[in-house]
Amino acid sequence: MPGDFIDQVEARILPVFSSLDTLEKTIAHLRSHQHNSFAQYPPWKALMHVALGEIPAAQAQWQSVMHKYVPRTTVSDDSDDYVYDQFCLLTEPLMAGDRAALARLLHGWEASNMIGTKLEPYWRSTPFPLEHTL
Image 1: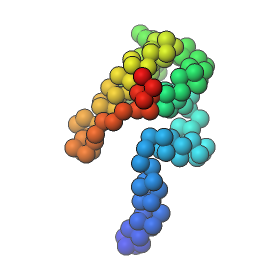
Image 2: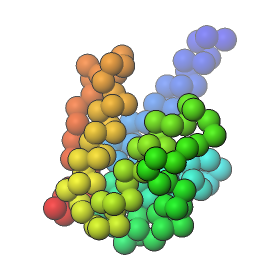
Image 3: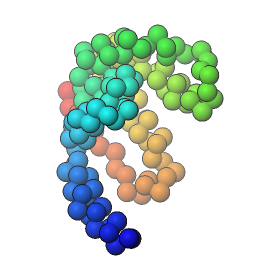
């Protein structure tokens, strides 16, 4: 059974992961799987538009939910406080179309999710597509 598992991962999973060598390809792959819960989650959709530099699309998506992400308001689940607080930081630079501030925000989130993990030694921050139009 372990050998079959390894064979299946090598034959089916690794080729998919290997093909996802850019953020654009990864987002396109995730968007193509509508059963993925993130594919319909408005904050995720807005962030993907931001990362890709699609600011008008991100603004349109964010407008439908930004009233839920207001600083210094509470959420019902304490475990969500960090994510909630991070989403609250998105409204101002996004609605102003401040690409540099959005890039700093994305890089900060990226670093906070990698630093201190086992993946940190392998992680290299690279520019987001958003930054190619700064």
